[in-house]
Image (cartoon, rainbow, N blue to C red; front, side, top):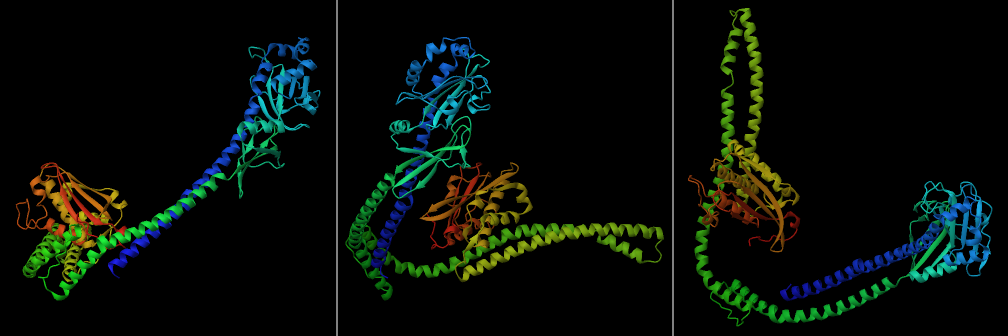
Amino acid sequence: MSLQKKVTLIVVVVFMLSGLMSFGVQRLAILPSFHALEEETARKNGERILEAVHRELEMIGPSVSDWAYWTDTYVYVKGEKPDYVEANLETGVAGATLSGMNINYLGIFDQSGTAVWTQGFDLQEEKQLDLGALTGDRLAKGHPLLQHPQLTSEVKGLIRTSHGPLLVFAKPILTNDRTGPPAGTIIMGRFLNESAVSRLADQTKLPFNILSADKQAPADWIGSVGQDMAHSKIGLVEGSNQWQAHTVLSDLYGQPFLRIQVDTPRDISARGLAAVSTSLYSLGITGLMMMVVMLWLLQRAVLRPISTLSEHALKIGADDNLHTHLDLKRKDEVGVLARTFDDMVDRLAEVRRRLVDQSYHSGVAEMASGVLHNIGNSITPLKVKLSALQSDLGAAPVAEMEQAAAELASPDTPEDRRGDLAKFMELAGVELASLVKSCREKVVEAAQQVVHVQEIVADQERFSRSARVLESVDMAAVIGDAAAGLSPEMKSAMQIEITPSVTETGAVVGTRAALQQVATNLLVNAAESILSTDSGKGKVTVKDIQEEVQGQLATHLQIADNGAGIQPENLERLFERGFSTKDRIGSGHGLHWSANTVKTLNGRITAQSEGVGRGACLDIWLPSAQESAKPATDLEG
């Protein structure tokens, strides 16, 4: 497929994906937000109506307090103020009093629940009402309105009457300074009728209905049943044109009483749908126009010149004629690329001849030095382990055991001597068994080090034949294995801290054997740097950061030490072949080999230091295994 077709396809696919993404965002994110806002509005409307009803009940409270905490009322209930009724509660005056307080009921009861004075009153028709027990001779013992555990306690809520639901508020009768004992109870009430519902609807700007509730009590009561208007959780019912919020109010006995229903039109979602549709149409038309213009501009400014350059390059490749020039007369980047290409072709013939000879000799030398350095790093701890094993075996009491065995075999050995020899053989056997166990562990460690050397050789052999086989590598495990393979002197010289970030950032793409040797080289250098300071035990910290490099997710590994540091003028040369600050034959290959190895794994390595005596940090960037399905990208930047 030609570049022109690919670009056209990519542009079309990108705009289609953009359109689908916009459609998905509008439909799956923006439109549901309108729906959620509408649902929340419906719920809040239900809460507003509940608050309005509760506020209607609370408005009775101040009047109840004025009459209940009044010494004249207290004395009247005690039977000591006979002119109280004539001054305040005569029939004509009482109606005016109830109208002035905008209440439909006033009741005064003594401590036994006997009615001292009661009256129900219709404020619209201005006539007295029979409200059953509330206007009768007495209230039943244990009636909720008479329960006052404290001097200033209050009882409020809804109660059923023959003339509809009544909002009632009751307080104990006390003196002006609110002292007791209570003389009785004063109760005031206001009907929650159609007039009250209409008034509340005007106040809240929300039309609502109050209906009779089912007799079965909901399981989700909210509030204090018997002391206030308990209600069920606000439920929502979604309709095609409106949301319906509903809740159930209880009466003073805790029984379901009234059902409040608030209807909220679905204006928000309708406007949201219209806005989303308009936005999608606009995006579609704009995207189509932009796609056509972009394709035309790309064709004119990029695709056609690149096609010419590509045909010229193919012709040079086919003819193997490095003396043909393109001579493309352009002043933009494509023109610069064409002129650079011509210059490159001119130099390519000379470079090609020298490169063939040089690459062979240089590659062989570099491969040999790198392999020998890596094997040397692995053999050094192996040599230490074998020396320790030789020392342990040399300390074994073999000669003494042979002599004791010879004496035991001799018939001339006395019996008491035989006992001592047997005891010696037993103790020597225990010691020898412990020594064998210890030597076995050292042999296992030495064998693991030999296996690592074999892996280095095998990896180098694979590299010499073809490119390395990449895999997902756990760097935390690799660094841990590299640290375990260090010599005892290096282990004791420093504390290696592998932070949790190395595990959390995940695996990298690479070759385990090569990366383990890179880690070994860096840890060996850090240990030698720390040992050169003679400052006691040093520290090496390994941490990991995920970054985006060249548009690809990369793992940034940092290995920092508090050793001797690096002089600023040596930072640039640190990874050159043969460069070393150590006065030792064979130095100068480890970091060079490590840098080349990391580069072949599509990564890069750099060094930083604040100066001599202030430690150093080696930074390694490697492709993250999370993007292993993508084509490998060189992270060299």
